[in-house]
Amino acid sequence: MKGRILIETLFQGEVFHSNKGNGFKCHCMSESHQRQLLLASEDPNQFMSYFSEEFKSDFLELLRRRFGTKRVHNNIVYNEYISHREHVHMNSTQWETLTDFTKWLGREGFCKVDETPKGWYIQYIDRDPETIRRQEELEKKKKQDLDDEERSAKFIEEQVRRGREGKEPEEEPVFTELKRESEEEKVAFNLGGSSSSSLGPSKPSSSLGPSALKAAAASVKRKDPSHSSDSKDKKKKSALDEIMEMEEQKKKSVRSDNWLRPDIVVKVITKRLGDKYHKKKAVIREVQNKYTAVVKMVDSGDKLKLDQSHVETIIPAPGKRVIILNGQYRDAEAILEGINEKKFSGTLLLDSGPMKGKRVEGIPYEDFSKMA
Image 1 (cartoon, rainbow, N blue to C red):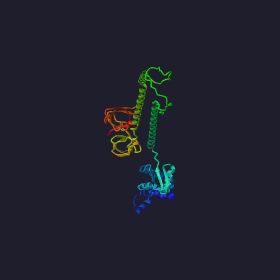
Image 2: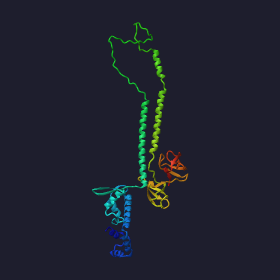
Image 3: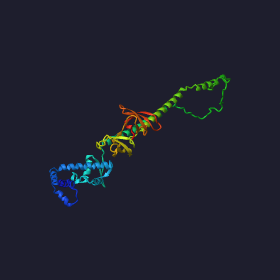
Image 4: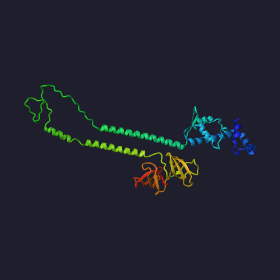
């Protein structure tokens, strides 16, 4: 039964486009139609496999291009697919219903499928190498950011530890209550320098004479100043390290994974658009969502919408004007003075901004491009 439906559907409307019943009858009786029916009846599985592959390819292409990786109801995609005039009918494929086709997509790993009370939902799995590479780069960047945060936290802990080790422990004064052991005992002060007393044998005295006071004062003044200077040097050194660390963090923070901007010349490197646009130059007219560029081809004037991964920068001849797309000098205009082919970098002379006139070396090729 399936083969008979297939044969009736294969060529129905492919050659004949009239809506008149008479014309359709004449077409069915024609020699070409009868010959196609004989060919299909000899090996219906071959035709069924062909149309099944066509249906699957067109359906997935519509799902990828129209909905991306969003979760969507399968009926919405199917209704949009059959709205096209030249589409493959499902009754000429190996799947009897849309539900069977949806389950097959899930089993084969083309989509993520799940059943709900409202029906079946599908989600396209993007296995494009460029997309996978971009996701890996994003994951790598996130991991690098986490590592930088951990290093910063360890650096702060090390600074706190050094500060604690370099600080001398201060003896806290202990306050005690003044008590007199005997009510009859008198307090005596010896202000003289003589050690003799008419009161007989005396107890060891803790009083200090003028010479002892002067010696103590001198010893305080002569206290080794190297300790304080060392501590100051240590503080200065740690502050310098902290500034250097902050500069390194600043340089890393100014880099971004998106570099597209209007009015620069780029080269199309994707082969998915055919040889007509492959390795051809284009000018970016508009940037959408940071990673999508609306470009105008230089030679043909065609307008295309391309992903950032589908284009690359253009390195002009020395002396030409370029614009820096990433790094510390992002968005600055410059003049290309020379290139280093071994290191894949260029030497630029900044021509705008507060750093105008500064010569910058070692700028990677992917961080600057020719101005339109």
